[in-house]
Length: 103
Image (cartoon, rainbow, N blue to C red; front, side, top):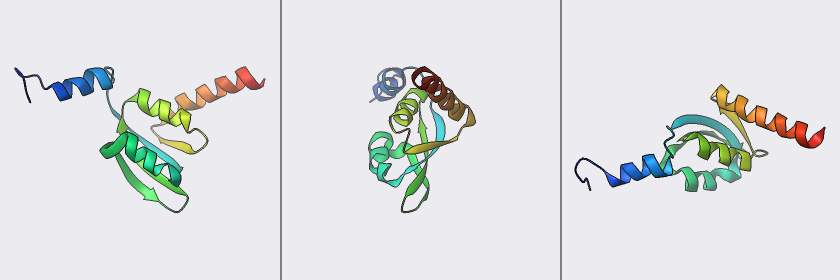
């Protein structure tokens, strides 16, 4: 439904669910066993690029805060392929945590 040029579904997705963030594309390789969870969380925004018995490579179109949270939750089961800036950000956070807890 559209009310006076405002689509409530689009408004809710952009302003509430996306928190004003813009979607971007991320490529991640992870354990195949995570595929069901990826499908549940990202739905049609996840595309399988490659799979074998152990790993799956997916392209996910989502907002930074959502993919960041998901990756950090599964940090030992996935690897960020791209974009490099996102990979670097996660790498820096891991190194900071390492210095805080392991040195």
